Length: 82
Image 1 (tube, rainbow, N blue to C red):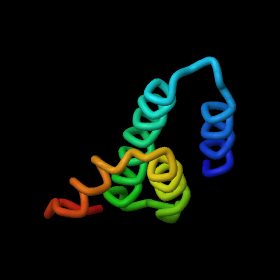
Image 2: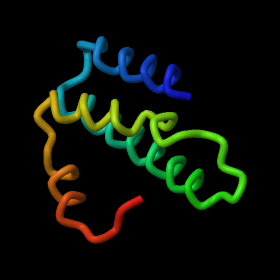
Image 3: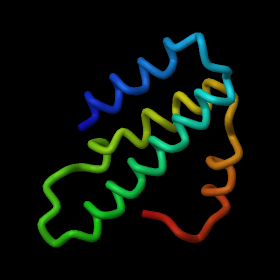
Image 4: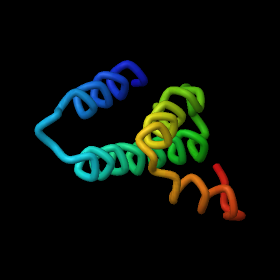
């Protein structure tokens, strides 16, 4: 799964026809999907994938590199964690 996420991230970052905001918005959508997958994996009694398989850490790293910190800061202050 992580390989596919990494490929999607690379495609989004390479697309210079989009604005920075549009790229961040798409990365945020991918992050929401990755977070949902990670949450489902941790709630499943038959979970076979590790926490890195969702690509969430990689997405967070790329978003931070693009200057998007709002979600990361909000989650640091939140009581809800995976």
